[in-house]
Image (cartoon, rainbow, N blue to C red; front, top):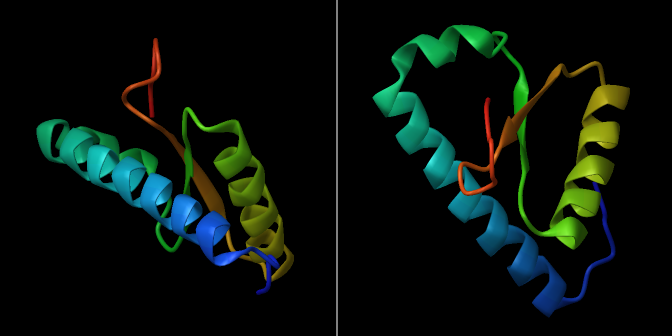
Length: 84
């Protein structure tokens, strides 16, 4: 999987997704019933407050879906009215 990103773009993508993943894990720890909403074997793609990162995540999701992987979208907690 190649996105052709510069090192700075790659760093932004990784850092933003890492922060979103940590927020999602904290949310799941506080609401374990939410785990049931994530299909077994699904790849979790985070929707963040960063539009550019969301565009890159969409490209990643499309590549994964092309391999038959189910995608579960997690919305960043810091977004207004965020839900899983």
